[in-house]
Length: 149
Image (cartoon, rainbow, N blue to C red; front, side):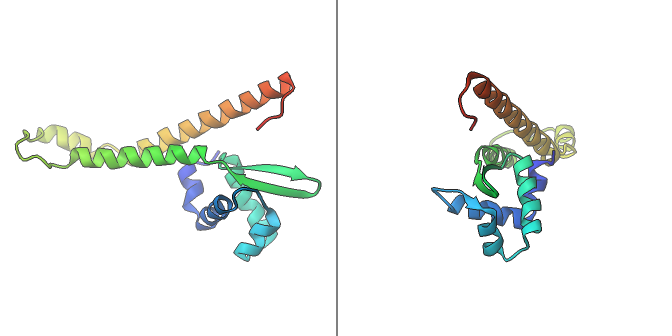
């Protein structure tokens, strides 16, 4: 599975997500996305598969047609990571001059930590867990006879 940040890095996929968000209250057919973005159907389908594999969209099939809908839950993971990083940056600023200065050895050690890489890893792990939990819940619903989400 692709890292959610890699998935969101592509401007075409971001534009597809925007279109799906704005499609409320319904879903968008692949043809609608193709027409809106002026791209070929295979190109749009490739990007929708990547978004689907990342759990960012879900698909509903009606005969030969496929309708896509935004799944905002994985985006909440990204939002949480970005918020945490912003809070972390604020916490490391020297806003209060009366506070004691950090030990230079600690500052050097902290500066060598790849917070962005760690955040991406945590975000990717959280997204994978969310997708796995969703598939288990869908399996349970199927076993119990109710329709999966």
